[in-house]
Image (tube, rainbow, N blue to C red; front, side, top):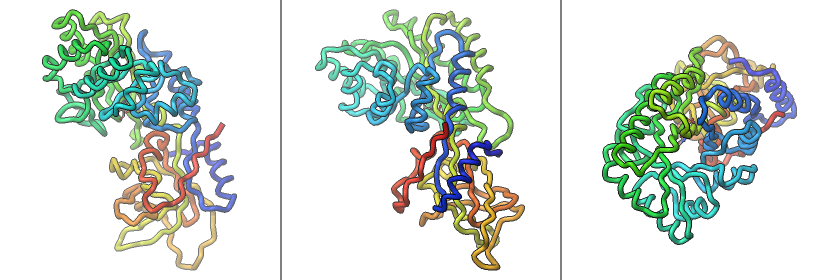
Length: 400
Ligand SMILES: Cc1ncc(COP(=O)(O)O)c(C=O)c1O
């Protein structure tokens, strides 16, 4: 991985200030460019929402706003409040996720958010009761757990037994019940197949499957029209730097072909993208505190571990890594170092699970150097075990 020069310069400046370096550096220019690019290439009717679970930092929300994203996909009242604080209106919020509480649903209804995505019949009834009490109706999408899964994806959200949405085979039972609830205004479907997908054809297959479902529903229930189809997120990032990035242009062309084939022009299509938009706008930068050989393996211990950057351990993948060399003098003559070898990176936590990188080749690293992990803009700090061992929270530094 090459660290952009301005990021490295900032790092060096911070490191020279003298305190142990352990921070995220954000530059949201890539995110803004990606939103603008996607908005340009997508077929008419596609709306891009930022799935703020990827990174809820105000700079990322501001980037989504500046780049004219249609809105924000939220998964909690806390996310809703952050989005509104950045200047998004409630009408720009769409709300997905299992286990929405009564308070959260009530907030959505009273504030007038764009759509609430129903995950179960219990949730449908809970929302209906809230609508009745508030004297309002709410636009909803029905989230479906399709009988389909993308085997190569990092994480799947449909297929098999899932807490997400209503199983596809239960629709014949669920749809008439939902249609009969007066507070809910059925607007369409939400089917999010998988996260971290690099193969465009796999994601397009999900789109085709959803279009087929929408067609069946409209044929069986002429009063139910799927004006909106939400594909969730899922555009992948090439964490392993294989050179095979997700190709959004191919996805856009494929989607357009499907829209034409199904005669679905004029409908709305939501994308709730997190990882693809945010990942390359952030770097986790942590100082090397110790290096030691232990029974044939070299262990590099950094200031921050999975308390600050849990994603590599959680998903058992290595993020791209670069070392910023600092030429610090050794504390004693035999102090160990890394030279052209594969080593293990971890943090200061009292668990063997505290791994930042496994068996990763490094040209050279010394105590005092900075390990910089790329693609850390998405699912970085917010997904980490921040309270474990009560280390100081890493700074989040935003570059202009
Ligand atoms: C409902 C929902 N939408 C969107 C996303 C964002 O997915 P991604 O980061 O893969 O684009 C997620 C991620 O978990 C999700 O659960």
